[in-house]
Image 1 (cartoon, rainbow, N blue to C red):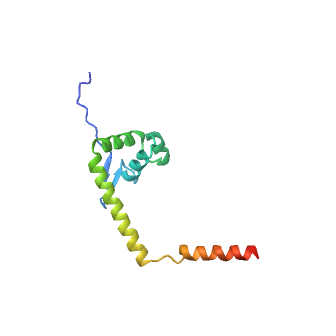
Image 2: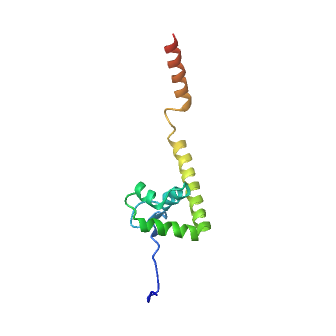
Image 3: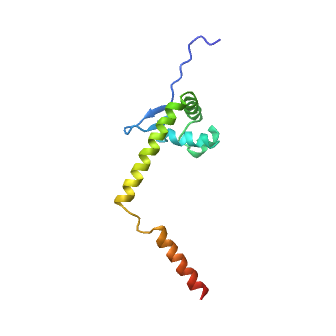
Length: 115
């Protein structure tokens, strides 16, 4: 039997912008959880993000599994914030090359090649 109580620090911290990061890295908890949801193992996740340690990934996933509702709420908030940012950015800086322009160019190229 272990004589001392087991206390484990969860390697998740909030950065200066309130985003959750894993361990002492800049890797977002979001990325770890999305990879886990896609079926990646902790070993695969550490291969994707070499700055992460395997034990930090296991602990982060364990935290997610024990606090799924809270983490899912956080992830939804991050997704909504990202979508708002994307829309604002695209409104302020519209793309110069749109899908319509690309389709026009493709059609013109096809016509030129068929003649």
